[in-house]
Image (cartoon, rainbow, N blue to C red; front, side, top):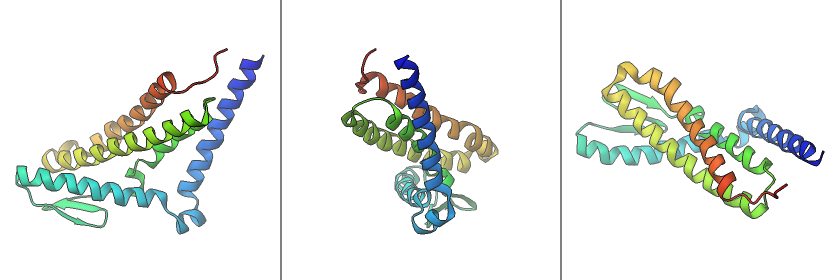
Amino acid sequence: MRSYSEAAWVIASFLFLIFAFFFLLSWGPIVDRVDIGAGLAKITAWISYGVLQVVSLIAGFPLHKNGTIMGSGAFEVDVAPACSGAVPMSIYLSAVLAYPASWASRRMGVGLGIGVIFLVNVVRVTALFLIGLYFQQIFHETHVYVAQALVICVAVALWLFWATRFADAPAN
C-alpha cells in the first residue's frame, strides 16, 4: 500500500510543479515583473549569435543581431520566449523535484538539467538559423516538428539518466 501512496504523491507533486512553473512563465502579473522566458531567450540569442559569428567567418555569410532577432541578408529569426527552452526545462525540473530522492541528488539534477537543456537549446537555435539560411524550404517543419520535439526528448532522456544514475531513491 505504501508504494501506491508514494506513487500518487510523486504524480501529484509533478503535476503541481508543472502547473506552478507554467504559472510563473505565463501569468501576466508575474511575467510583467519577471519574464523568465524572455530572459532566457535573450541569453540564448546572445550565445547563439556568438557561435554564429564564428560560423559566419568560416562560411562567409553576413550576420546581424538586434535584441533577440538574428539575421543574414533577408533571412531573420526571432528567439522568442517560447524558443527559450523554458518549457522543456520546467518539465525536467518538475520531474526531478517530484522524484523521491535526497535534496543533494535533486540539487545535482537541477544543475545538470539547466546546463544541458540550455546548451541543447543554444545548439537548436544555432542549427535552426543555419537551416533557415541554407534550406529555407524546410525551416518551418524543422522548427515546429523536429527541433521542439528534440529538446523535449533530451529533457526526458536526461531525467531518465539522472534518475537511474544519480538519484538515490529509497529501494522498496
